[in-house]
Length: 134
Image 1 (spheres, one colour):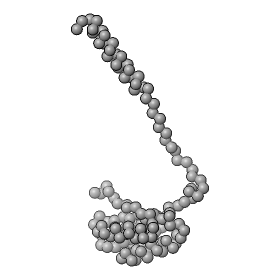
Image 2 (image 1 turned 180 degrees about the vertical axis):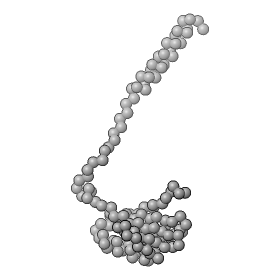
Image 3 (image 1 turned 120 degrees about the vertical axis):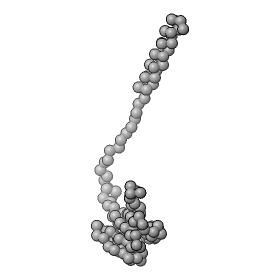
């Protein structure tokens, strides 16, 4: 390569690097992080009522309400606890949240039965399973 071609090649590489830096530095990141604010009105006073149903490995249930555990030997007994809770919190049914915690060795049908019970009474439900132990 001759001397003139070498300088043109260096200028070309320098301009490519310069335009690269300009294009990178011209990027503007517009990210807004919404900070939590105080919710006023009726939405701010709502309270979630957690109900926990632990499904045992031998077709037994444990119903926990207000941190008070109650044993249920059958699905009918568990349904009685659901009815009592709905009557206790009448008018607040939308705020009740049922956490279903199945035992690793429990039958899947038992979990489905508890989900069906929640559907029957229109309760919001969620599976609380320890996936880390898998």
